[in-house]
Image (cartoon, rainbow, N blue to C red):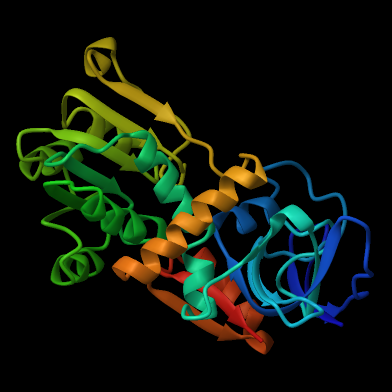
Length: 306
């Protein structure tokens, strides 16, 4: 079969690869669409440890089982992955998906969606809360803005570096206000639109923007951090943290049953409340272009369609 291959040096190329064989506890899935995210590039670049052998990238996708059932899948069995004609997936990671949602939307709302939903549920948003989404223009941020609305937030702010993309979020009604990061004093920019201080912060990027965000909160605030694109450390004083909580939230490492339940909650929200995410869809023969697009901060979920 044809598949994308990550070599030991981290390079990406389409090539022939052995097709998966049926195995106990796993499904062979005929892939119709594959998703790429930041963690796929981080793995190829050795962030999670050296690349010791060639493998097929792509952590999630949509496809069909041998009986024709359409499913979402994540966490293929090594060395298989989603950017291929077929993949091998543990039974616990194969989940049915709504027929009315297109492949790209199912994929965009899955890993990215659980990355937004779980921490925002754990933040316990109260009606009327002031909510800030850091890194709001990407897939996780887009979903988080809509979830904040659905949970009853009273004032929702989108913050990111790209002013045009921020303006588009406001036009869609997903944000009441926006703050451009990286153009001056981030703390002052966030405080100016905080409506007296943020109660909840979903932080997708960490680093200096997270420091500024914490200083723009008010007592009782909950900041939930899930990504490190802007830096892997923060520097906060005890005074910054008094009467506030800062929690690093992991979603992908949770048991499959917990992630599956969150996925189905998201699918219900998508069908009942119209959750949607910007996507950029590439054909399978342009998989290398899709990989390059992910490296360029695309402000959309990258999907490869077969």
